Structures are given as C-alpha cells and as structure tokens.
Length: 315
Length: 300
Image 1: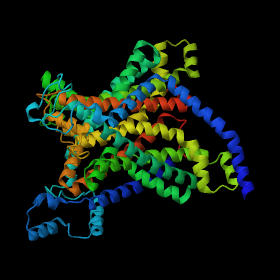
Image 2 (image 1 turned 180 degrees about the vertical axis):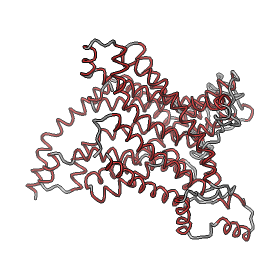
Image 3 (image 1 turned 90 degrees about the vertical axis):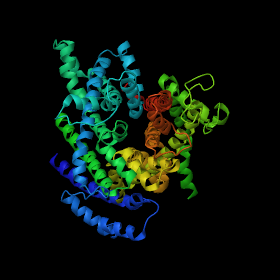
Image 4 (image 1 turned 135 degrees about the vertical axis):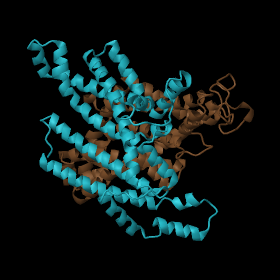
C-alpha cells in the first residue's frame, strides 16, 4: 500500500510537471495576446514594445517558462498581466467560492440520490423504483446550464424569491445571505448529480442485497431495516464513494458555466475571463490549480477506497 | 508461404463467421427488446432526419431576420415563437440539429480513432511505448474536460470546426484507457498466441484478431460520448466560443435566451429542451447497447 502510494505520488509529480508544460506551451500558441487586447487596433509601435517589455513578454519562451516554474515551486504563480494582482491572491479569493458550490451541490446530490437509490433497490420493480429510475434518466441528461436557466426563470423571474446573481458574501459572514445566492447554482449542479448517485446506489445496493451475508443477516433474525441500513448500506456505498470523487472533480472543473450564469466570483469564471482577456499568466495558474485538484482528489479517493474495502489491494 | 496463409485463414473462415454472426445477432435481438434503447434510437433517427432534411422540413430560413416579428410568442405562424431578430425558432432548432449532430459525430470519431489506436498500440507493445502514451493520457486526464476544450479553442480560435477538434482531443484518453485495458486482458489469450504461431505480424494481430474482440465496450463508449460531445458543444457555444453566428447552435441560442428571459422566456426553453432530449437519447441508447453487448451487466 505504502509502495503504491509512493508510486502514485511520483507519477502525479510527473503529471503535474506535464501539466505545467501543456499549460504554458498552449499559451504560446494563442493567436493574439494581452497586449493586442489592451491596446486595441490603433496603437503606437513604441508603446506596444514598451508594454511588452514591462510585462516580460519580449523574453524567449523557455526563459519565461523556467522563471514561471521556479515561481510555482515557491508558491508564486506570477502576476496578472491585466491587473498586476498576484495570481495566487486571485485564486485564494476565488477558489473558496467554487469549492463551496461543489460541496453544496454534492450534499444536494448525495442527499437526494442515495436515499432514493436505497428505496428503489429495496423495492425493486415497484412504482417508486420505476418512477425514480425514469426521472434519473432525465436528470442525467439535464444540462446544468439549462437547469440554471429554468431555475432563474422560476425563482427569480416568475416568483421573485431568489436573486439571479449579484454580490456574494462569505458564508462565514452571513450564511443566510450567502446561501440565497448559492442555492440556485448548487441546485443546478446538484440535481443532475443526484441522478448519478441514485443510479450508482441502486445498482450496487441490488448487488449487495442478493449476497450471501445478507441471507446470514436475515437468518440471524435481524429486521429488514437493520439488515439494509447497517449491513447492506456499508458495502453498497463503496462504489458510490468512487463516483462521488469523480463527480466532485467534474463539478469543480465544470462549474464555470454555472458561475458565469449566476455571476459568481469563482475560479471557473476567473478562468473564462482570463481566456477572453488573453491573460495567460492567470490562465496558467488556474489550469495548474485545477489539475492539482483533479490529481489530488483521484489519489484521495483511491486511498479512501482501499481503507473502506480491505479486499482491495493495489499492487 | 501460401500454405501457412491458408492454414491461418481456414479455421477462421470456417468457424468465425457463423459464430460471429450469431453473437452479433444475439446482441441485436437483446437491443431490440430493450425499450429505453429503442426510444433513444428513434429519437436519434429523428434527429438525423431533421438534420438531413432541414431545408425541406423547416418552415422558414433559419437566418432570415424579420425586424417586425421580433420576440413573438409561440403562435400558428411561428410554432415556437421568434428571437430578437424575428427569426423563426422552430427553423433554428431544426437547423441547430445539424450543428449538434455534426460536432458529435466528428469529434467522437476523432477521439475514437486516435484513442483506440493509442490504446491498442500501448496495450499490445507495453514497455516504453505504453509508458509514453499512458503518461500523455494521464496529463490530458488531469485537466477538467470542458476546461481543456476551452483552452484548445482559445488556442485554435472559435468556430464549429475548431470546436470539433477541441472536443475530439479532450475525449481521446477515455477511449485510449478503455481500449488499453481490454487489450491487456486479450493479448495473453490463446488465440493471440495461435495467430502469432502461424506467422501473423504485430499489425495483423492487432487489427484482425485483437481489435474485433475489444470493440464492444468501445462502441458503447462512443454512443455515450456522443451525449458528452453534444453537451460540450452546447456549453462552448453558450459561452460564445463554439459555433459562431449566424449558424444556429442550441448552445448559443440558449445563451441569447438567458439575456431576454424576463420578457421572452420561450427563447431559452426550446434550445435547452432540444439539448436535453438528444443527450437523453444517446444516453439511453448507449445504456441499452451496453446491456445488449454484455448480458452480464443487465440490471446493474
């Protein structure tokens, strides 16, 4: 196990190094750069050269890459080309919003999906099972950006209950105000996710219910409730945890559209803005943070998985 | 040489076709009994029809503007209403199916072909080839998929053809890993040794013997991947980076709809519904295909 972990970490370092190469390298091929966008069409060549020099854009790519990489190792992701704000500060401000959104969505997804999945599996082929399976198929196909639109249409336009965006306060300052802005974005990502959790819980529960140790549990005289909730659920949830890991990474990396729709100041929107503005230092930093999250969550899930299911041994 | 050739071909020709057909036939029969899959398939057929016959079935020209008819609600003249330029939404939805379908087919083909070849080669040869391919796939996998597509488009520039390439690149690792995994279990089997013994080269073994045996999960993945691709195109166009106006795309139509939601909600409802129905169709069809090709998975 320890050996596996060491190998995984070593490979991850290699992958992250590859990510820095791809992130930096792809920026070099973006046709127009930040200077074009800042100065517009009619510009003075001297001013352009001066600006390029100030931003360090006149140095050869390799030199810029090494300087950036050196900074990354020291925890310095450089300064935004547009605002000159340190990228690390921007990420520190924006990442929590994206993380909160993903966590809320995951809570919603698990909160609906897992109980519904258990009920559907225990009462297989019942009306409740058929209905929830059908609903989950629709939920699975629901684009989060459309659900977001429909939620705004219902709660902001028609019933005027919730604001469709606006200033976000930190949950530590005023949780109620914060949730008012976060609940619709979280629902638009969490409801489709609940379909994923539902299907996974249902299918793994069905498998566990038919296993021999469940027969043993029943023959010991355990009530159905106890057998299901204690014996079956524990084992059935293991695959759900893997899916949760995948969904959380997907949400962290896919939240940018929802962030844009609700104008939430998250990391996703920062990334999209950096693309529009060709602020490649910010973009590189965001990409690096994203891939660190993806790699980190995937290792974390592997560890959790091995810990929960002692039968799993990584070579 | 010719005798060894006939040796290697004869048993294949005698035994495989009959058995092969019955396996595929079984799968097809199972698929036909799978009601959700048939529903999905019918929707896909309808989508293909709409895309091909768009000029004949859509009531209006999808890009023709008509200032006097902007933001008309659904009516007899315009069944789904009109947008801010007075363009007929039904016609734009029908033409939008061309965008979704072509992006789906081409981008999935890109990931399928490149991913399968990479998976086949790395799983078969192992060693350094596998090391290099697998690490590149790891790196691609380390980026959130839609974000990677966004960056590729930032590099290539917006447009429908670049969107296809971007989405195609993003899903290569999905196919490569899947294919590599299956090749790893197949390459040790007796029929591969047999093929090698009768003198088949590596290329022939991979193409003629291993590939057909690892194809089933790849086909299932392709069907599911179509739904990701349709979603991704819509998402990128929603952000204004995918399909460019005036070409109709459900994603950009939805984006326009969000801006005018307060007075003309229908503009954002139809394109979203269209995306959802198509994604649903590919999802349930892919599910059914998986059950049909691998009966062991039924009910899971």
